[in-house]
Amino acid sequence: MSKLLKEVLSANKKYAKGFDKGHLPMPPARAFAILTCMDARLDPAKYAGLAEGDAHVIRNAGGRASDDAIRSLVISYKLLGTREWFVIHHTDCGMETFTDDVMRGLLGKSLETATVDEDGWHDIGKGRGSSEGKYIDWLTISDLAESVVEDVKRIRSHPLVPGRIPIHGYIYDVKTGKLVEVPSATKAGQSRGRR
Image (cartoon, rainbow, N blue to C red):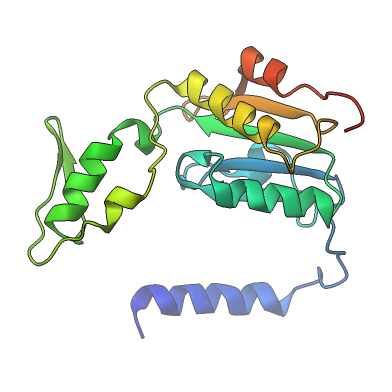
């Protein structure tokens, strides 16, 4: 058993010992969802004032509106009653440090972890690579505010998303902890009647 696995299981044992949340219902109590990045510096529970059971939090690289993220949002409202959504990207995001071509090139060389320095990303791995990365849109970010706008528009225009759900666009500042609205994203995500 690895040291990390031992630490995780030990922490879970302590958590489960005093666990008192088994009564929480499946639908989120505050009826909203957040789509945000998987970056370990972001704690949506803290920056959005959440307790267990309050909201759905969907996380992926960059907080992007991928097909799977939209699938989760649709399930969130259709089966579990969320009525408002937030798209929250963040400053200093790793998705701004490479392009689809860079990722495809790194994966083509090896499947080992790459390194980065002032000259960019480098593959130091030995062994085989894979061309499978060319079939994935990595949804990298070249303009942070524009990526929020793109994602809100992508969600808003999806045929399974009702127009009545407001979608808010924000950027979380990793240096200050503040949420900064992207007004053009929030405008694009405004509720559009009863549909």
